[in-house]
Image 1: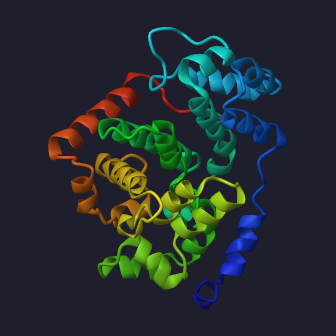
Image 2: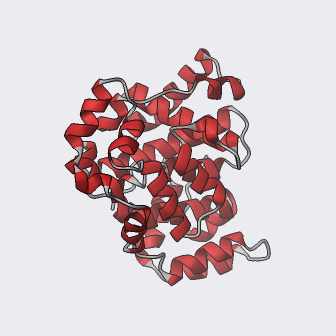
Length: 285
């Protein structure tokens, strides 16, 4: 395992640099959604240039977690009914799917498992955010969606270091601690570098970096706690957990800080289970 122990941040950054940037159309859409003077018509005109993106946004807008009493038939309807932040979240969701669909044998995740887990994580994180009264619920959705994106880059190193990592886990290390001990980095740190490459907000980069270690939160502890709890609930439900989910440390102070008791946590899991069982929630690629 000398090769893994010699892994440097420069090498990690080099791998991250190989990740393609967002297409210009997507960047333009993101800019429009952040512009308070922009209108729904302007946003729609940009999105409909990409038929695939348009279809996927409408699929998401009419999914169990977004849909209200009326169906949404156009991008403009989605922008008006759901708001620009929700549409921005949908755009991000459609863009990163291809990046997260591949098999990750190092984490014992079959093809599309990380993508499906991430979508459920996003739903769970948004549900936790709603339960605790966090106002930026679509930001929480995005945090849940991206929290494990670093696994895509770190997978090959984890796979080749599997025996050493597993030995440490058997000795009582968490998977994150074992990653750091053997490879020198954990998937959260690598994921934060990806977030920086994509020019995502610092709040999201922080969540990705330390959602397994929420006590280290500085920029937005509340968002980190929400994402950490959502991740923990997914582990408890056993949804596409992968090998690292078997060695996960739960930070109980997060539930205290958000005033979440056992009853509320059970309600959240029940709500998300109903959404998942009610109809397909995955955005197909």
